Length: 112
Length: 114
Image (cartoon, rainbow over all chains, first blue to last red; front, side):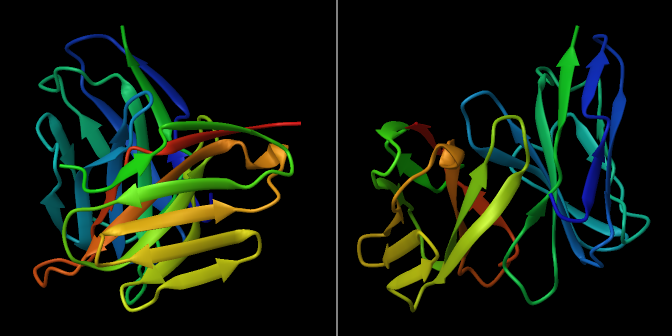
């Protein structure tokens, strides 16, 4: 899982609550990404950031928000507007001039 | 929308056999990558092949790329039980507006029996 940490590993949330997933990297990478993975499915891009204080929506950004105040950190907030938030969330980073993404271990979010 | 589609969706083999999985994509690419995911874990990068390359090797892995057919294959030779995992292809678009996003396929679940 390289130098990327995600916490917590498991997260339970009641409907109507916002929750923030942590992603930290010590690889000095400029770009960071959040993906959602549903059972038996591939990865879908939620948000990505190529530089501090800048980020772009991915394919399924509705109901999610992010911030990129520090190079090392890219937290994802799952808001109450996300209709089906139960999923496995993966964070990744990539260095400038490279094409390889490094992934964290993931956070499994369950909405009760 | 996901660009990569993998085939087969699931594959079961015995240790020592070879495993081949295929990936098809839709648009022009800069490169194609293969990742591995153990159950409940993050993805690990295996190998990258650029659009001007046709074949690449890394240990027991062999990747081919046919840009005319927009397809790639991953061959794992002499498979081991530890190779049991899901394998995903990912493509980096050649579109100028953004080359830092990867589009992942739906994956092939490989089971290797001892």
